[in-house]
Image (tube, rainbow, N blue to C red):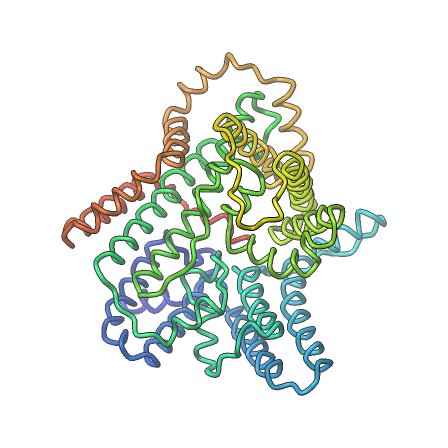
Length: 496
């Protein structure tokens, strides 16, 4: 009976996909790490071990679509060799076009087919039926990852990898597979064949990242989502303007804690295995401008869009007007990457307009000097504070369209905020949502704490003996389970 139950747990269940904050993942990772020390110094065996474990992880999240992952990896692996060995530039262009068509085509089919059908029906009054399509988890991430690999080879920035097992491991590495950070081949592939070691400082760093990720996701994001934010966004017209506004600020914290929490856990898990992933967030709500914000938020996607879309479009090299057009195109397509909805297109367009205005204002008041060695002008403290306030509120406002299910819901929320604010309800709200209010306040306070507090805690973990580190981890897990809802909440970016 126990063996049958165990074998059943190894089979993909569409109602319970494998995610970091599930009890099965704790068992999966513990089992993985139990045998890992035996293989860590045997490079080929380690690669195969982690690659097969990663494929199993993806099978548990998306079932048969693990084959799509393997096929995508295989096609881009072969194209990489073709690009390196092609005698003519014409053939190289055909091969890179094939890579882009496959990657964007598979992404487009699974993610945007029904969006196009709905749009055509809406524009022309058609009645085309929606397709029964399952969106594979993480497809937006691994298609961008494989496409960047072939593009880097095409631009001669990278040599193709010889071992398909190594390449499939790069594509499928489970900590970041389903929600990022988006790996760059030039960053990760050199680590595959390195001799890995794990010292006490790395363990402390990994544990701190896992601790913070679990708390962000399991305590703050999930609790305020279930107990307040989701209720308001699902029916904004039923709540006062103040409650809609507070839910909007709550969602800004929720989406940050949810996504950065995933990234923290992913980076921490990779660190526990000896691999280094690049940071995906850098205190984004400390940003003093919209440009600064997008250098701090979802860094792996922002830099991907910059390197493979904004720069090829011409970046800022073809005049001011073209720069603003390139910013708009990049942000609109970035919005569409997040979801197949006109809400996401509008969200991207608003951020494109904001970035264009931000660039225009900075060109007037803080023009760039032609001398690269000239010292940077210091921004007065008051302007920095005002910049942080404006940036945070602008980003938060645009998220009305990011989170709302429909355009009508977004307009209803805006209407309630601007016509029925009723600030006197604030203290009543505090009484009814004491824990939610406390978590929102704590979440923003921790985000704006000076960095020395975080580095101080990391130093404490580094000096602590292993039993103390294990005790802290146990306490964190216990706290997460106390806040856990009846149903495990998937990470927000799984849908992208």
